[in-house]
Length: 169
Ligand SMILES: [Ca+2]
Ligand SMILES: [Ca+2]
Image 1 (spheres, protein in one colour):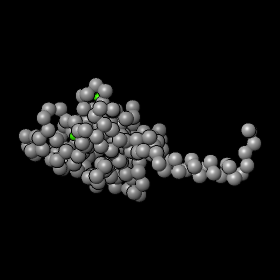
Image 2 (image 1 turned 90 degrees about the horizontal axis):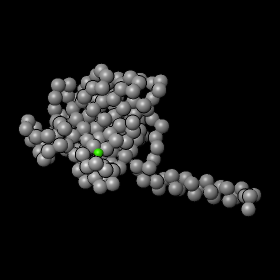
Image 3 (image 1 turned 120 degrees about the vertical axis):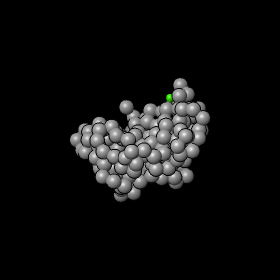
Image 4 (image 1 turned 30 degrees about the horizontal axis):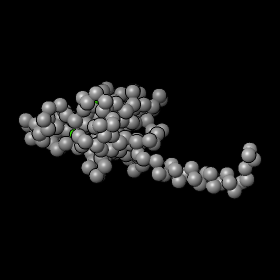
């Protein structure tokens, strides 16, 4: 039947909205400039969160500016995991078109801030944030709305088992 009544159409729209709300985080597509390029969720070697001898700094998240036109200031952006561990970019940090930042664990020069092309920011925290079995990564805009979301599992998302997953090119 080709002709639909208005009532049916309205129901269909309501159904579509309900479906959208129910879509799992990893299936959502966001239109924001900043997205997760990839994550080294499992740092090479045996995990140790000792600040000076451990390997927390080898666990990192790469956030990239995918906008074709806009420079983005990271200040006020937040990244969160499933259980609410979070990191706030507190300093001005401008990402030009196609630039990215690596957010590493541990501390280093430029801790908590950074600038320039393809730079590094340290979380100033020696504990790991991205679980090795499964987790979800949420970049959040300064306004509080999500910029992107990616759920992963070691089994399902990391085919070659090297601890790294690519989400966006
Ligand atoms: Ca990890
Ligand atoms: Ca991989």
